[in-house]
Amino acid sequence: MNTDNLGVKEFIVGFLSFSMWLSVSLFAIAGFAINIWVGSAFVGTVVLTHIIAAVIAKIYPQAMVEEEPKPKPTPKRPKPEEPKEEEPKEEEPAPEDPYMEGIPEEYFTQVTKAAKDLFADYKNAIKLPNIDELIDTMGVKFVWDGQPLTEVKDKVCLLFRMDVARCYTGLGHTIDLNNKEGLGLFFFIALTQGCAQKKSYADLPAVKATYQADAESILKGINACMAQTPAPSEVFLMSRLLAASDMSLHRKFLVDIYRFASITAKADNTITNEEAEWLSNIMKLQENEKQKADSPAQILDELIGLEAIKKEVNTLSNFIKIQQARAAKGLKTSPVSYHCVFTGNPGTGKTTVARILSRIYKDLGVVKKGQLIETDRAGLVGQYIGETAIKTNKIIDKALDGVLFIDEAYSLIGGGERDYGKEAIATLLKRMEDDRDRLIVILAGYTENMKDFVTANPGIQSRFNRYLEFPDYSAEELLQIFEANMKSYEYQYGEGVKEALQQYFSDELAHKDANFGNGRLVRNVFEKTLERQANRLAPEVNLTTEKLSRIELEDLPIK
Image (cartoon, rainbow, N blue to C red; front, side, top):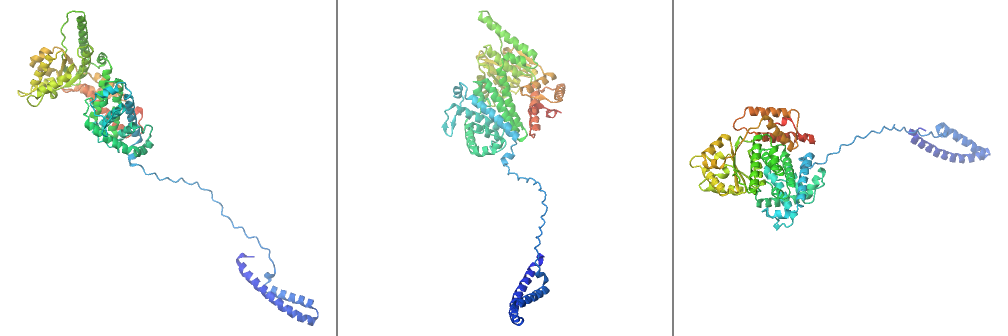
């Protein structure tokens, strides 16, 4: 059947079936009557049945035929579509930590490495055998949170913390543990608290969240201790301690704290004049310590140029040795004048040779300590009556058993009748006589100016008869000095750099005047070169050892 008309046909069949039942019933009654009439009930019934069937077939013939149900057509299933590869959904980036946004991973790696190196120095320092005795001579109030520190490791830890913090004040930075510059100090504090030793860049937010409050509290304590502790003459407190106990560790400490300060200074990708001056001071400390490590004769021999000066100093040293040998044998000796006048332009090595000579005097027993005290007119001359003698005597007292080096000594005269420079000279000459066995004086300055100065002062002329003239360096020697600095700090030439420097020094010599800087010129060029290299490399992410060690043409501060 057509399934669409199935309901209608079922109604019709039902209606006809009821009608047929009713008709059969009526005809059965009628058939009974006919049976009587016809005489046979069976025959009448059959006749009536055929009549009824004929009537029904006429009215609805399809109703009398039982159709076999046709199978329901199977609905067509849609052809399955090929499964599409789902495109990966882009994950929404997790909100970044604003603190992390300002700290690149490369900077984190550099500054935390420097902090770990300083922490290693601290661990080595507390193991030194005589460290507890030396600490007591520091003149530092070892107090924390109102309580005196008694453990050696706690005292040394405080000194290290103050020295690291001093890097920030020396660089002119305000200490803020929440910014990029403050990360190094924060990490060092965490290390001294026994934390963060194996923490990575990914751990930084968690480390900050965990230790920030403690670090801020410790920083307050550091600042309070620094306020009560006078700034050391050695720049760093640990310098005094390590220099008296372990020179090797002292030199390593200076290298490590220079690297820490340098990385911190470059955090904003620039180097200010104040930062450059502070880094230069630390660099000078390293050079001085290197000189102390070697014998004075070896240091003198390794100086670039100055052949005539080396010969003069060696001659003086040999003369002293022979006179001492004669005295030991009971022979007569010739008087030796240890006072000297160094003449020449700035930057020709006068101060360096004075340091070497002071050590030679100490090694030969001429003086007991051999320290070199440097001063000039400002350190000797006062501004009112009576002040000059006090200042001059104070400086001389520091130099006793060592050497007093007066730079630009000629400036002590020429200030007019009311100038107090003459009082300084008179005080100096008297102390040279009174303390002749404990005081050696070296005067230095421009050649012509020093000649006039000595000639105008008979007292000076009679006491100084050893003159050493320091010549200007040649272009080749200036280049050698630059290369010596590169070697000391592990730098290498890039393409064309050596040739450009050689040409630059040659041009500077060709146009030099009375203020030509010689070695100072080289130092300034070298320091500016490192600053420019730092500014060039700071934006880079992947800083290899080769990049960090290479000086390129664009790094040179020359035209």
